Amino acid sequence: MMSRIACLFLAILVVFATTSAGAEQTGSAADLARQLQPFLQVLAESEQPYAMTAKVTIGEGDRAESVSIDVERIDAESFRFEAKHKRYWVQLQRRRQQTALVLPLHKVAYVGTGAVSGSATLKPDGITNRLFGPGSNATFFLPVVTSGESNTVATLLIGLLNLKYDQATKEWAGKGKLRLSSNDADRSLTIQTGNVRVHIQRRDPKLSKDSPINLGESRTVAIDRKELERHLVRGVRRGLEVLAPSPLLTSPIQRNRKVPHGELRWIDGQRVVLLQGTPEQIGRAHGQLLKAEALRCMDSVLHMFGTAQTINTGRWFKHDLEEAYKQLQAHIPDDHKAETAALAKAVGVDTQLAQTLNVFPELFHCSGFAVFGKATSDGKLYHGRVLDYMTTIGLQDAATTFVVAVDGKIPFVNVGYAAFIGSVSGMNAQKISLGEMGGRGEGKWNGVPMATLMRRALEECQTLDDVMNLWENSPRTCEYYYVFADGKTKRAVGVAATPESIEFVHPGQADHRLGDGIEDAVVLSSGSRLETLRARVIENHGKIDLNIAKYLMSRPVAMKSNLHNVLFIPEDGVLFVANADHKRPAAERSYMRLDLNELLGSMARQTSADAGE
Image (cartoon, rainbow, N blue to C red; front, top):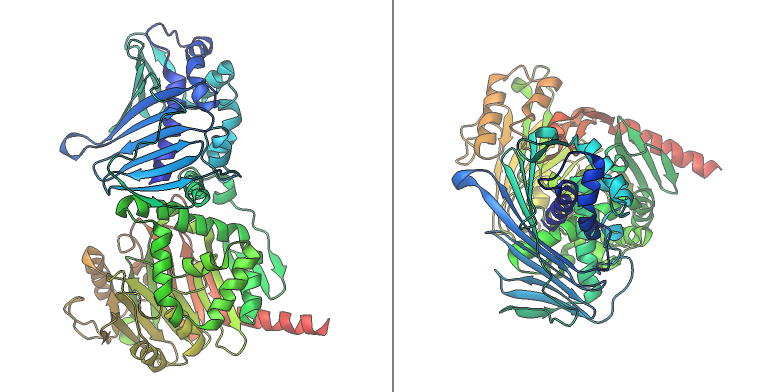
């Protein structure tokens, strides 16, 4: 959410700077440049104070929503920023020796004091270089926009937006039915495009460097100032990457790499990482091969999503994660902790932070199915898994399919994300496949983390009964639903599990949450997605093959937030994986085919070759 505000604020400033020509405008770049100059101080980070307000309205009539923004730069060290919506209210205030994130709706203020320096501070001086990195397209335009060269900026923006001045309406018109009008009398600008309306107004600054931070009626929570500023800078920076990704993210360089105990391969445009050895060796190779992706994933979860959660709940997100980890850590195997610690060291982050982030409470809204026998055209078992979760925070930039062979354990494939060692979608060499669907019950953390339990099943279980026994005999957290399948016996089961109870839904069994049973099928989802998935399975019963199984997972069974889809054919040791990009959900992307047995064979051959050197 903070990233959306920051990106919106930048867009407002850019458009404001390019369109404040007023009634005297003739439409030439020179005329625009003369009017542009007073506003470039905002983007050029002038030492002069400035202040502006904006009201953004989206929609029309009763469904319209609006957010009001007010920003004032005091000096090179100090500013005040406010964003107000009916569901949130954020005030970010900074002075030379103090920074405060004030949440008036929750009556709480997170306040850090003392000196702070480095590459992740919020001081206005040089802030654009800290908020915009090579992962954001906006970075390419910043040198020109912040140069203060009004003629260059005017020419560039007229070209980019195809701006033309309409003498009759006294408006600029641009791409996408963009309409802009300005009023010199009150120093305002109105932007209209579709059902989005933005009204911006410059105002006189009111604050000085000696003006105290206003906390209102909020209670104060002390927080390390460096952590507070780093959290917000990295959250906004990551948010700007997600909102305007550069080719670094949309078209990454696909270069295969090898390190001891690990290999990165690009297959059909997707990352596949092969890891083998001890937990420490696997964690180290993971971090070495995926350092940039791991850092982006951590920024998405801790700083971007974490900032939104803090604003929505009034609680500091990292504190909530730390509290969850205190309850969960006793149930995490030591070898998993060792792997995470080695990963953290290779990436260059605090070990405790990496351990904490690996219990990030996944609240997935997903679908899953297993069909076999009479339901399929060839009798094979097809296990589909749809993960609908948070494409808006850019987890797709860290999407990686891992093939993992831990010494002394069952090798497995894990469809996941850099920096996370747990599993939500996976299949092992014993032809066991698993997919998870989140429910409710957040905060019930006295048990084994869901992603840890999933990984343990992949590493330890040889049969479907083994998996069911693991779930029955392990302390569980929250509320989760699962589909488990065994390609050896062509058996599958649906699972509803809470800390207090566990239920198994067998093929053909009716269930009050899922409807009437379907022969040789297990179908899990919710709402209209469940209705659609059931209808597709029934319609195609007896005809389901590879292509129809993929169709079962297409929209609208998959949501707009569809992060990844996996189709397991466990008896063949084969899986098909699709990951979302920044424009399309996974269901609308192409699938990568992987053969787990072939990949494990190549890893064994590499190990033999290394031993012979």
